[in-house]
Image (cartoon, rainbow, N blue to C red):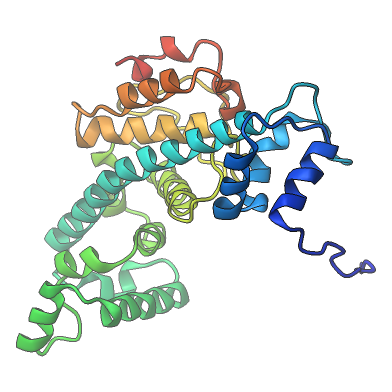
Length: 301
């Protein structure tokens, strides 16, 4: 079925024109010169995702009475701080997954297990993955990679070196494509999860990491992928419907669960609560938080 497409009708509006347009639609400005400066440096389009909840008529873009530019910008600042907080914690998860994957597979096979297509479910995906690793390896300017290339004849370094320069996305695909069995279960078991759940969580964490890395809106986003809900996690997790939820609350709970294994003394929960206290107007329900979220064990700091 085809639809008749039309050209995009919008034309560029000057920065002062953008403010006038927003005023016509009912937005109030407490500090117009500051708003003009922000529109010049952040862009109307990026900020528009944060004033969307303030619209009474989302088709005609008419604001609710009393809606201010400052309210939208406050949400923007909260979202920016939230992304920075998340990406710092995801880095710790990424490092731990690299370490366990390289260690467990190297101890059961050899240092070059990632080149062995017989260890993977889909040979075509494995070939593409190896090509991606080769691309990342060729592009790397890390000193330890330069030192390896200058000294050794092997095409790749051993896995504990190669895994250090593969992207988290590549690592996630690599794990998912491993043959089902004891080794795949062992890696997941380190994090207290079944292998299918762990693969799903890795995919979700990579997806959220990419949102954060590209400075995209996260705060009230409905995620396009839905992580699996573990049936019997080894450690404490939240209570949710069996199919989980595609909102930020679930992914933050996943991050906490993984951090509880990697570093039981982490401060993510207290940092998140401190962030909320700096932005008291933020409605956590927009992120999928239930009313009783503070009573969940993993959310107690």
